[in-house]
Length: 144
Image 1 (cartoon, rainbow, N blue to C red):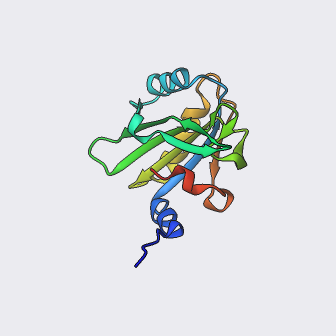
Image 2: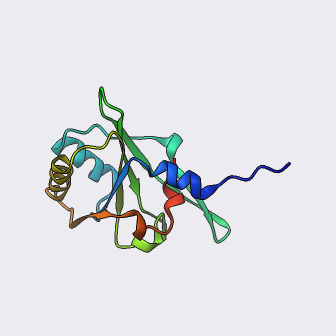
Image 3: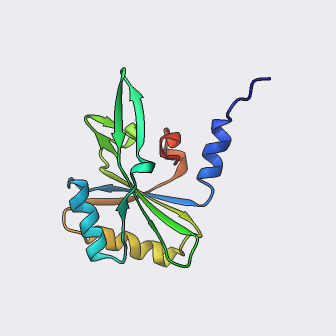
């Protein structure tokens, strides 16, 4: 008997309690993350075990992932770098530099608006937009 992974079910389950923001900020990752950590109440750290490797055109592309767990809550924030060496984690959003995924016990609408405003106020950030699941073609690239 051959077992087959149901990618659709995996994607659906992973994105069940999530919210995704797209960020246009042409800054180096370490600069952007440092500014987020300094200007907001986060403590993002790079998580090399979560790094996403895509195999395309017979070579590998590496996408950094930073994470932060909210103390005393089942809430984790992930920050993905959307671009590596001319390839994109989500090619349908080539204009976005970062993807901010909120997963778990999601904050309310007011907190979400405050989060978006906080990100917008970071020097170098040009755009913050909520990405709805329907717009994302390559969701499986974000699964950790």
